[in-house]
Amino acid sequence: MHGSATPLSDSVSVSVSAWLLVLLCTASGAYCLRRVRTSGGAAAAEAVMGFGMALMAVPLARADGWRAPVLGVVFCGAALHALWLLRGGAHHTHHLVGSLTMVYMSLTAAASGSGHGHGEGAGPPLLTGALLLYYAGYVVLGGTRLLTAGGPAGQRAAAGRGGPAELIRACRLAMGMGMLAMLLLM
Image 1: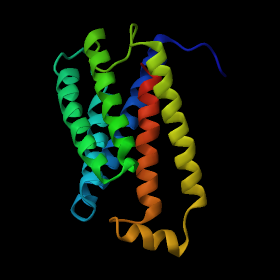
Image 2 (image 1 turned 90 degrees about the vertical axis):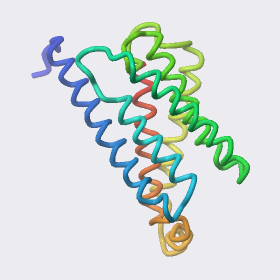
Image 3 (image 1 turned 45 degrees about the vertical axis):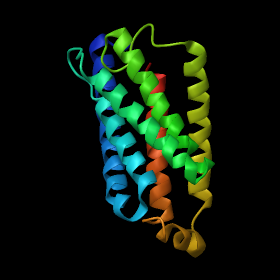
Image 4 (image 1 turned 180 degrees about the horizontal axis):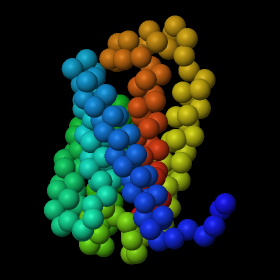
């Protein structure tokens, strides 16, 4: 029942996984975009991150030369925006880390010529490993917060930020898992 995988079945499973990641990141980006009016800059940064991750995860049959450089420029801008958000407090540091991670993956993708960061020569193993540890910790912490949060106090606190606390946390957790998956595929 669990015979050896063929190259065709491997490529189909990678393609299905990639499209599921695209869907997850697009849904997260759309939800964050909806929150921009009530939440401001942080939600805008999360929307850009979600849509950018979705675009980077799209599996294309042939390598495209435009996607990685364009995403690199977009995420350099997002990193500058994250620096601007830092004036409001260190709790925006994750936006900066996320934007710089996307710049790193874009540069790596452009250097490898694959268009989306998958393949050999995917970047310095130490930096990739550090980012994997960061996002693994972020996902575990985010999942724990999601499981232990709730109740009326948490919902009231989130109401001022533009949405139910659990949904906002789930959106952030989904993007963290997406980032972790993209780093693992490098």
